Amino acid sequence: MFNETQLTKYADVLIWAMQRARKNKFKKNDIIVIRYDKPTIELAQIVYQKILEIGMHPIQRMNLTSKMELSFFTASNNKQLTFLPPGDDELYSSLNGSIFLYAPESITHLSNIDPKKIAITAISRKRLRDILDKREEIGDFGWTLCIYPTQELANHANISIEEYSDQIISSCFLNDEFPVLKWQETFKEISKIKTWLNSLKIKKLHIESQNIDLEIYPGDKRKWAGISGHNIPSFEVFISPDYRKTRGIYYADQPSYRSGNYVKGIKIEFEKGVAINVSANEGEEFAKNQFSMDRGASRVGEFSLTDKTFSRINKFMANTLFDENYGGENGNCHLALGSSYSDTYDGDARELTKDLKQKLGFNDSALHWDLVNTENKRVTAYLKSGEKRTIYENGKFNS
Image (cartoon, rainbow, N blue to C red):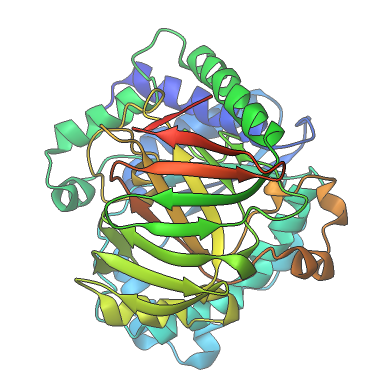
């Protein structure tokens, strides 16, 4: 699927992305965790060596196999579901970087597990995520992740493993002579779009498509973010809006796999920032359970747009990392229910306390679920000056 040259280029891109994602520069003796699924062992070995060569300390952690994860949720009692290994708090408080190599051998093995059990574990582990979020806010932690092709992913995307691999190679620029340089150029171009959006001083966004009629309010002290290095590939531009004012109908025409469950055709009605009605063509009960996980799970944490000019992704990939960056004919928008992103705060993230987040309408939840719409759409910005402007149409920004 990947030759040695492509794997080496992939590793270079991932290390660049992790470094790009951190506000403070990395230095020698920083601690980097490499988390990987078993099929990515060749890539993990190359990343491990490169981390050593630049003078940092790699810690390798192989993720649970699908059988292990199924055993965990099948056999665990409540204490085991919420158990965190001794030393995790100390380790997470010392981490400077993370690279996650995702290559699932199954994405449906948890389909018969009670979603409430999965939610219990997610909520218990939120404490560790909060540690890393705080370290990221002060500039001491950076992370990235990627996908490695597996037959399981290809099967659920209804394409061959060769086609799946080609989508990754193309969208990550792994056949370019200097893929890191290509990513740097892409970063500069999308940064121009972010600067333009941030200059508009938007009061409200109106998103319209065949099945969407939604109002999003960016809120005070916000900025548009994106292509930060957190995900490879990544072409989206996003904001964490003031969840309290979301109103209208959102529809995800692209299917989604989450915790082993297949969900298709999710339709959500918002009123005063809360999802008051949820339906789905498939997986409706699971979706409703997810959105009741905690108080913030029924509220918006992110709104995102992808410009098809940049994204080479033109197939459904059965994975959010690629699907939320879909280019195709119409680009895409996606809405995430659950936690918001502090890097969309227009200020020093170190001052973004829990109380300030609540005051500004940044959402907090153990959930973050991206729901993608690829319909042709128009996004109209209502500016604080009173002007109205179409900022996105036919899959492109109108900058």
